[in-house]
Amino acid sequence: MAGHSQFKNIMHKKGRQDAIRSKLFSKLSREITVAAKSGLPDPAMNPRLRLAVANAKAESMPKDNIERAIKKASGGDAETYDEIRYEGFGPGGVGIIVEVLTDNRNRAAANVRAIFSKNGGNMGETGAVSFMFDRVGQIVYPASAGSEDEVMEAAIEAGAEDVESDEESHTIYTAFEQLSEVAQSLEAKLGEAKSTAIAWRPKTLTPVSGDAAATLMKLLDALEDDDDVQNVWGNYDIAADELERLAS
Image (cartoon, rainbow, N blue to C red; front, side, top):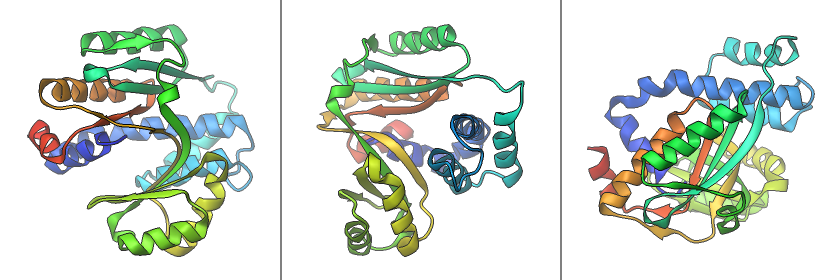
């Protein structure tokens, strides 16, 4: 998410955090329910559910909400969600991957297509963008977890492949098949992660600035604001001062 996570951090500092909390909990609950339905409803025996619960806890989601989402998976009236990946291009030729969990494929496709077209982008065919990304495991720790050297050392010992650190956080990358193993090793050394996920990491970044950057941020925010959208990934690079300007 080169840049957009940083943009969101800036916006949250400016007072928008409360406005997105309810929507975030809804998306986390949906992922927990789908994960519980895909395997055993016990996080200890279901790696996907374990990750979903850990991410919910990292966002301070109440325990009752988590338990309710798990129980919902075993209910006869629980919705059936389809997992869909859409790919497209944003302003400046930026590649964008959109991951969706939806109970209505037609609605989701129409909404995502409309958001692209209204914000300077266009949908592509499956595979049109994903070849520009690597599928990886991504573990994020706050900057307070340790110094750059300390986190790098812990990541190497855990078997991770790469670490990116900035003033906000440490992002640790690993082969997605080894995500659970590396995450457990890191937790023993650094404590609980802020988030753990299978991610799309850009192989190269596309610089974006000016009007294109402003329109791109509107596109990304609109996608993430859609109820069916779970994750949005892009291969863009926006300078820090540009992000501050866009957030002001």
